[in-house]
Image 1 (tube, rainbow, N blue to C red):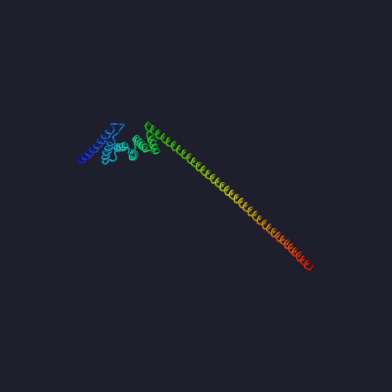
Image 2: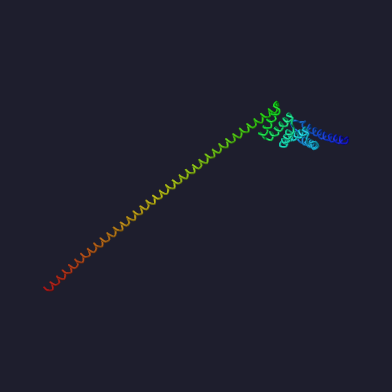
Amino acid sequence: MLLLALVMNGQAQEERKFIRQGNKYFSEAMKDAERPDTAQFNKAEIEYRKAINKKPEDQKWNFNLADALYKQNKFGESAEKFKDIADRTADKVEKSRALHNMGNSLLMNNKLDESINAYKEALRNNPKDLDTKYNLLYAMNMKKKQQDKQKKQDQNKDKNKDKDKDKNKDKDQNKDQNKDQNKDKNKDQKDQNKDQNKDQNKDQNKDQKQQQQQSKISKQNAEQMLQALENNEKKTQEKVKKVQAMKAESKKVEKDW
């Protein structure tokens, strides 16, 4: 029993040594509150883990480890660790502290709904905690601002969508107008060309008709002229025959006389 007591006492001293070293690193990291030394927090985390490996159920050491994780901006890990502490303890004040820090970790990780729920649960265990009330209101205000921003973005998105829709509509309308104008222009040009061709054909037909008429008149004139020539020639031949007959008669008389 004495030997067992000495062994246990030695282990306890080793665990406390890890904790003391971890606390030392933690304090050194916090010397400059405005610029905490992350490397020192990491050293503190290592020492706390060594102690917890010897005594996993110690709530204070687990709390120190979760706090060191938070100071290194390891918000996901610290939130899980604080939740584990809250689930293990039956003390309402300790549970409230763990839930409060869990809410802080979630808030820093921009998980607003989860952080609000954590703060509310902390207040259920310790309704008089003013720090938790303040953090709850802060998280709710952040959520409202986020919702307002998202609503504004959605409105601008819808506005731009409607604007683009109207723009496309106007573009299509202009396209249709240009199409109609081109259609009308082509139709007018086609009709104009058709009328020009019609007029040209009309003029050509008129010229051809005139030419045909002129040709016809010329032919008639030619026939008339030929007929006149024939008539003149007949008259001339008759005159010649008459003269010849008179000459023949004159010779005969003279011969007889």
